[in-house]
Length: 332
Image 1 (cartoon, one colour):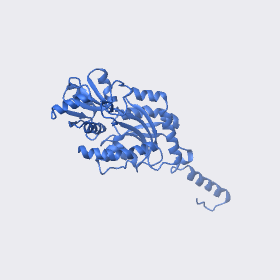
Image 2 (tube, one colour):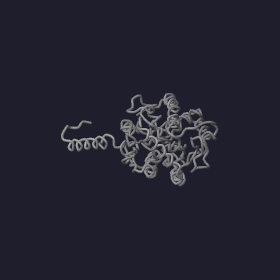
Image 3 (cartoon, one colour):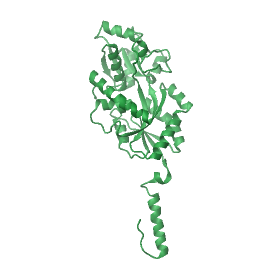
Image 4 (tube, helix red, strand yellow):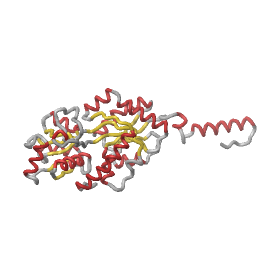
């Protein structure tokens, strides 16, 4: 700090003004006032109304209550989560910009694309896993198949007859389906859709016999009897569909393929911000009301700390790359 040499009183005034400016200037408000000193932005890399958006809005209020500042949802959709994920990866690492996204961001996109505006491991500081997103194999209600074993037998009898839809090429639903067919030793033609809604409409209309979608998306149609549930692809049965077996229970022990949601920040968070975000998210996910609402939305509460999220990404990424190569899944 530099002070002009004037008379004693003027010098003291100028020094005090300089001190105030250096302490409370715009360069370091969080350090002066403590984190968080302003609202926190939670980026959702999907359009409003989808599963990730619903969960983001569900947790944002109580997460904000625990942080003492509002948590504001910002939808930045595009390029299969790449737009929003890249935005957060390049944001200041101060704790005021967070990302909530699915495995699509952290293990699927990197398995399909060599060049991304982010690195799934190096770009982010995982705050914690929020939930698991069960995926389910579904059938048109008029298809004479009621179990995975019956589906396998039908495909083996007429190998070129059956196809399946997904909510997009290179999505978690696409990967889960290819894992299922690989385990079962069968092959179905993939019909990618631009989202869950058009795929579900064609499944109900009979244009495609099968699809894999999220339990959250399938629940209304299943409850209305418009489609049939064949098997859940996760390690355990879905809470909302306790009578639907898993793929593992259908003859493929150890099989598990579902999606998950996590909150991350740009890598390099200050220690105080990191500690407060970790605690606030853990406390939010321990809230019984939040857990009940997640289940009601077709998700499974599955909180895990940041270290566990990082370990999951590092474990899952090479397996996704192997699936993409084997099934010749390519980015559109």
